[in-house]
Structures are given as C-alpha cells and as structure tokens.
Length: 82
Image 1 (cartoon, rainbow, N blue to C red):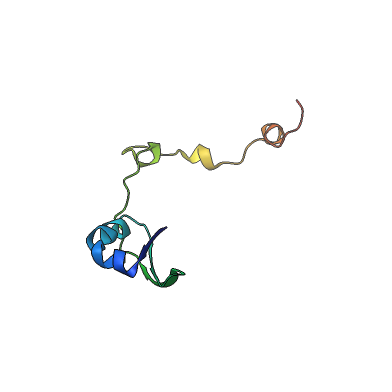
Image 2: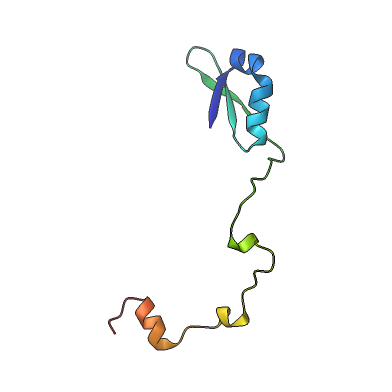
C-alpha cells in the first residue's frame, strides 16, 4: 500500500493514479500525525498478464484427471506407509 500526504498527492497525482491503475491502493493522509483521510484505488485495475500452463491455448485436462484416486494410492498421499 502506498501512502501520500495531501501535498504529495497534489504534486504527484498523475503518478499515483498510474499506481492505482496497476492495482495499488493509495492512502491519502493529513496532518502531522498523517491521519488517513482518503483512499485512491482504480475502479477497474489493469489486469496483469499471467504466463503459465493453464493459460496456454490447447491445454485441456482429461476426464480421467477428475476421477477419484484408488484407495491404495490415496493412503500413500495421506501419509500411510507402503
């Protein structure tokens, strides 16, 4: 989370809006104690592009993937000795 005083927010408003569009939340503070008085956040943040196998075109899980494990294999996954 980013914090800025009212003076800093007036001076750097454009860059704070850019940060908010990236998904950051900007807290505007006031006074010597820097009391939070407002929050700046994007209505629709820019989505970060994720790379990975699940987003690769053509990657499909077979129906077999969702079938329950056999009892002996399930015991091994739960920590039982062979």
